[in-house]
Image 1 (cartoon, rainbow, N blue to C red):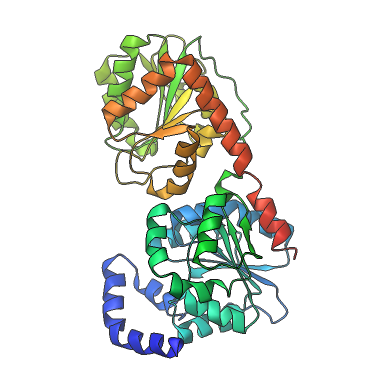
Image 2 (image 1 turned 45 degrees about the horizontal axis):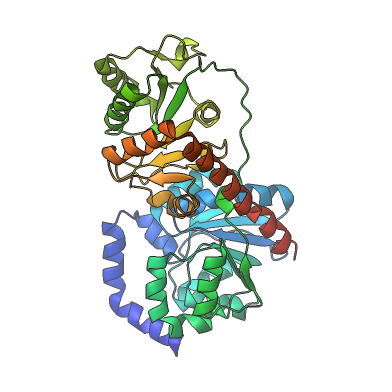
Length: 412
């Protein structure tokens, strides 16, 4: 009856759904793929097919290393990656086209569309990242004896309030999952409260923390200074960083700044802003390997930001004082560097939630709060050291998620 009602209701609202998809930026081929209108995958019956689903950019970023490790560990398998949003689709193609056998959209959750999708893909294992619960997909995979998992599972406190109201609805569908594996004990309790099977629901930690320090294959002389690194800044953020640096410099004259714009096409714009401050500066591209004689270094080389975090004392993570949604703070935290971010962090909201809770980094609402947080790092040695220790601890607590998936799901 449930599936019949889904089909009937969709027939009525389909025109509205298609208009909404079109108006929210989905290209025409995306809408067709969501309706499972795409070419056959071309997999053989005997192929072992592993499917990963991440709704958008953050989830795909979390899955990237796992998908690549799965290809390495299971070279004969077929790998499918699906997304829910067109931005997620773009990043999936960019990051995983060379690894996956197919990158496409997750189907609209209607029985007929889901059946067509599964007929074309025929997966043996499906892993859905974080929180997506699709009733018809769960019903159909169960009927076909396809293993269905939630991995890296999380439910925010805000979302949980809504889920609780509809616990009666979600409970029977959660029982259909082969396993639900969560980022934290708190997330585990939330899924169990909503009706997940306690025998197949457990903590796995957070995939996003399963990163390793990049090898730092160059030397850089800090010249006895303390360094604030502003990484991946966007238009409108450099002014905030430079104003904060100027204020900090009055109280902490030994402070230096490494400024790394996200896009090197903005080099001229950023250079002009730095010139206006009156501070001495240079470019990394000038073979500059020291802070000697300069207050600001503009990092205008490709591929070095992740390594340069090693040399800073604390970092500001850009893309967070505009609507970009922030960039990955773990690139700094992996080197045990405290982080500060502006309020726009929706691409990495779960990570920032963990970091803030552990007091390993801070989200600030405005430039004034940015200055206060940075000043605290520079003025209070005990506070600064404690923040570093908190970051080291939270990393140790969160790692191991990728091995969990490889050993407990794919080898089972």
